[in-house]
Length: 194
Image (cartoon, rainbow, N blue to C red; front, side, top):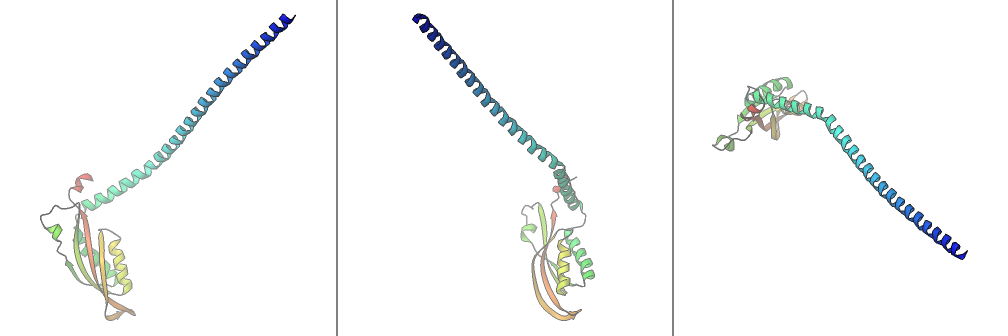
């Protein structure tokens, strides 16, 4: 009976160890599978986020292409414009000054040594001018706005103003000397936009 009891106890101990080993093995397998499943879910989330970012970028492609085409068309128009910027500046001054009540006194080209010498010409060519005009402050301001906001591309480097004799419509007349530049793209750019 004692022998049977010891055998029974040993058998129960063996079964307990076996069941414990099975439970520990199952826990190890399940734990490893949970870690792998979590890694797969993290990778899935990462791929999903990357796909969403790519979709946003692709949705902006049409707008970027439209902007690129708009810029190309502007540059092509500037390249193919047959009027030299200096001539366009004189035409712009003639039209705008008449409409705004500004009197153009003189337009004098500046000698630009770097552009005129044998040095290599840059992509963007510019000509400098000194322009003297008379008018009211408002009319001169309007002239500057009109000159620099359209085609051809004209930049005003500096303005010096003094009061002049006479009055126009109750406002003092000003004498202004403008240092302006006209810009045009070099001829080799025309190949890019044809």
